[in-house]
Length: 139
Image (cartoon, rainbow, N blue to C red; front, side):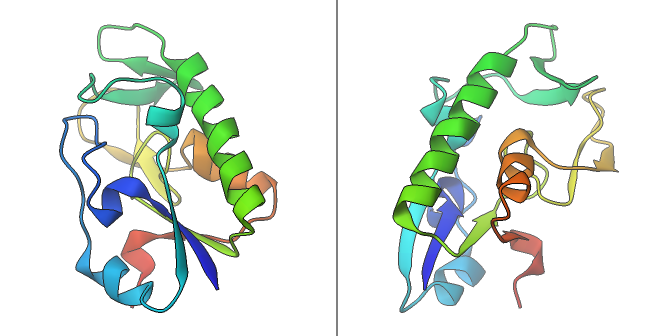
């Protein structure tokens, strides 16, 4: 099976703060499968590290109000293309991210409050009938 995975979960230092979210659960789950690493935020042209972002009234913004919505949406489209061209049957995404959050995202107040919803990339995948799994759902 071909599985696309948020690159940060595979140990790539592409997280907003320059770190990663390396997940041993992910590494174990994908053993024996073809893995495609994706980071929509980097694909959209955002630097690493970068300011944290949240979805505020449907627009991805930094805490100071600067919009990075265009970069997030461009990156989501490019990542979707990468996933589709690779023929990935499943995409495992990092929780809570304004790109990759599959079940919950931060509420846009930069207070650490989670709400039900999807990040830009996760939502685009779902709209294109691509199976999405939040990393927290792994056995």
